[in-house]
Image (cartoon, rainbow, N blue to C red):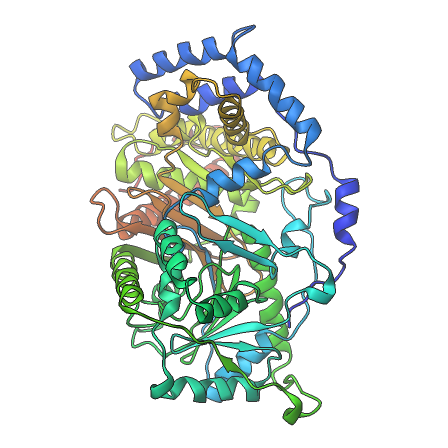
Length: 612
């Protein structure tokens, strides 16, 4: 059973780590104007500038809200935590699969038979997880470990208007010990995970007479729809008992049926994200649970995560530890002192009626629509990886972010509001803030790269590239040190609601609404084991772009929705590939020039036409 070591780290964190700061009001408003200036039309920006100046004026509304926010900071462990959790997750009514839950796709496994697959499943649940510290910008700073404690103790309850995230913090004696195993859309409760127990479950699941409707499909629905369905279910004691066991489990293990799809990276990503719909493995899930380990009989394996309790880094550490443990111990299997003493697995029972049957059918249809709508493209860029970028003395993350901006500009001739998650775990209970990658410097660079008249020299383009990368790096450092703008603006908005004020004009302004529609939602999720993370777009006309930089290649997982005619994952990937090659060629030409003796070449002053 995965358990967390070093429980004492929790106490240490709360003493050592500082509280999340509240940035100065003027600084946030100035940065906000800089971020949005090129995302809206000039007329609109003028209007916004006037609204922002009025909001930030001495004795104005902004100062009143800022003062209240500073008071809140003094009184709470983390002033933004609850606001952010509600805004980012709990108030969101969209279905969890694709829209919210990220997945980690494991390397394709080769199972000779179902016993091999079950052995892999048993291994997945054997080790204890070490708690590690993250690296990167400002490395070496202590980090808040709070998220690790929520890995196996969290459950997201659906609500009619907002969900509730419950974390079991009770004494070790009453901590959950059982896991739930899903097999053929049936749910089983298991106290000890060993191979023989999983084999019993597979046999029980095959019994057609005892098979019950696929209740897991309800958790794939919109949150309000699932909350309504759950109310109907809980009218019956049998259903209440089954729900109670699922809601208090450590994790869910999904034993998936083999799929007829070719196990390409893209197809494996799709099957992890939504199970392929209700006809495949889409109902063999329980999406409210924070950790679902998926083991497909044909070797398609991974983890599905309910995102509200923790960030991607926690998912990575957990997944990597498991993969290293499994590959390091192929023959070890969990032994029970005496097989006979083990309580047998129990099938969870459900009571169904025509109303519930209707709810199951409706949830299945809505999941199928989501499945049919998701346009996913997992692309391995092989021309270079982070080693080449580091040789240019550039940050790999900032470099890739600038390349994503170039790809979007190539497709649309403009930049859009972009989200890149930045960890604020340097602070107590720190989660994330947003790095806004569509900087004015990035815009200047992408314009120079796509200029048809070839008016820019290589040295001008290189300077703009370095400026764009520096701007991105500086914003990243501001974000991880608690100085970004998104959490701060959200805090000011929430305080105005708590004071029952009329909504301040800055938050009703078209620019603010546009700036919070993240058409490009990005995240760097690096791994040291061959696996990758992916998720869906956060808006109907947007892209999800998760990337994993390796030493000699970069894995990109680009998602969009087929229903939207403005987006196409394949078109975006093509532009991304082109852009990455063009930036490489520019870097190579610039370094060649830098090493040539002065006067030996006219090229530095010559405009260079980019290869289209």
